[in-house]
Length: 586
Image (tube, rainbow, N blue to C red; front, side, top):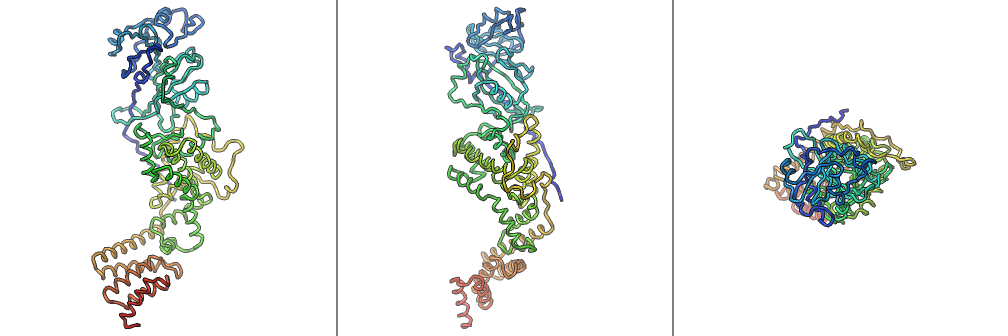
């Protein structure tokens, strides 16, 4: 059996770094010791290191107890321990900057201190090139400048910092930055624990947009007076990395496949995609309407209820039941006899080939995991609240972990569901999903997905009747029988199209000839005495054409055949009587 071919072509586009202009956001008020004229200006770049602290010891050490606090520490304090002040004029000359009057700078050990009118306003710790981070004596903990965004958030929250988000992680696509990996930028505020007067702004560039978990680059840390954070009016709390057993994060992990296929993240409830313009409520409304025809809260609730209750799992189960009720009947004959179109005939073939590894749980992995995504999208669109989203996500996540016994079992079953959805070309549909998962798996080396089962958890009662699905099961081959079935449908549909075109052109002989072909195909695919409904509809149309050209005998024969299958139809009986009248009452 042919296995999926993993063929990847890397995109040529590169996500360029997006410069963060923290100073334009800051605008710390003058009464807090901060500049009131920074709005719109870029953050100063670090100048060359100045003089090191004096021999009295490093700042914060027992020999030098000074702890720098922006808004309180003065330039005189720093000069007093041996550091050198750089005037605005000197800074502008050396760096091509445009610092205003009253500003001055002090640089040491890769740190840049900004001051105005003799009082410090902020401290910049540039980490992107040299890996510098704030010293432990200031921030209270040792930081890893190469930590992932989410790992950093988790570390700080576990160490007592109060976190606020300034700028949602976002990416900008560009082809103008050769040699750069794709990059995402963002920023958040952390209020200090050791020094509660200090608020730190963390600006980052990470190299993993989808999970924010792969090692990235902590680009810059800026220390401000704590009032900087307190003056934000639209802050949201940055979620920390959950503990191993966090129920909500384990639920979001189940949305991984559809998320990465839509180039989005799955580590938080609020959905995200590249580009800030794609993450507004209006953008999510357009997205969920285009992909799911959900244009309102009511649409979402109806879709969710239908998918949880039935979904594609119901269709898969019905297909299995149809096959079981007609053992030995060729699938194409069964499909045509039941009036199924070519797409649903392909679905019967798919079910016959995959039921051994999909049948015991049907397609619940496919249906329910997507409802986690759709619930997140509805939340992003503003159709439901956060609580309402979790009320729908957590139950389906629990159901999935009860039905599927491992992550591999779940992933393989989900991909199988996508093959059923795209039954006309299941290999491509399954291969696309499989490659997305492979690509995503390669990014998870810094944080594996949370455990499938926790102590005390296990399969739901009655879910162990069939064997678990395996990645090795993800395969599909179009058999000779299925290829022949597709050809039969092609001939059938072609004959019907020709008949319709002839009728439209008032070409009675052409229409009747095309109907001959269709009727032969339909009669040849009867199951027992039962012929497809389409056969009788064609016979009825044939009768009306024959009556129009005055050929009443074969018209009456066709109508009598229809009447025998659908007795009592008044229109058929009326036409039969017209034929008899024209045949002299026979």
